[in-house]
Length: 151
Image (cartoon, rainbow, N blue to C red; front, side, top):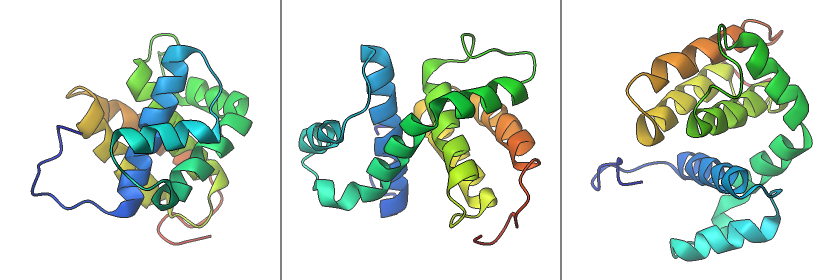
């Protein structure tokens, strides 16, 4: 999180998304399935209370449960790209955001996309935000719910 200005105050929900991306990235890099005890280990590294990261745990477990369908959507809407060509960190961000778009009707899609773009700014290269926005915008266009409000 060095890319985040020390003086910048971020919301607990964004902290949860940051931790979720780190958790998914870690599991991907190690070739392991996500387990709840990983959350406790990650929180211990940052001297944080795991109780504050229930949203991250919910998202990662939901992602793991629906990974095949989430990856299929990303693969379908990442025009001229396939999953193997997408950087690992961008793919983690896309997976978390696609999971939110498809399985969390309590979060407006516009919020999900904006948060994913912010995660791209924190963790990835300059062009990531454009790529992430493009893929998620195409996925968003398939949703049959309000884009700016819950449910």
